[in-house]
Amino acid sequence: MLKQLDMSSPEFHEEMEKTKKFTDKVCKQFGWVYHPDKEVVESVTMGLARHRLLYGKRFCPCFMVIEEDGKFKSADDRICPCKPAIEKEITQEGKCHCGIFCTPEYAEKNS
Image (tube, rainbow, N blue to C red):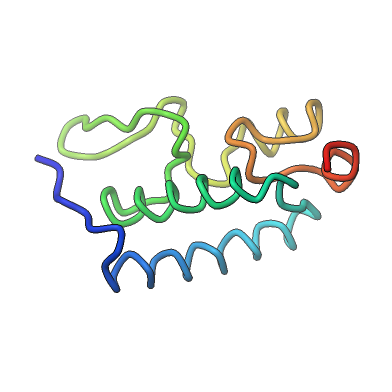
């Protein structure tokens, strides 16, 4: 059974801060930037923080998380930053499926 999560709790706010630091680090590591739509960034960041607290990993919030043999996994094993985003989505489309990360060119064109 899934535990209850209070998104106004100090625990959630602390995880949001950790997740923001994590996504900042991902941007720097790959030379990406955040999507120009701040609501997209906030929504995905919240989803990543929520999944970290519920499942122990920052599964992409756009994909279902299932329990298999007592362990959680997501569709296509999408843990942020996911392999499809790194290898295909951002290089070919300019942004990842969830939309939090994109190329500087994509951000400039869509701001």
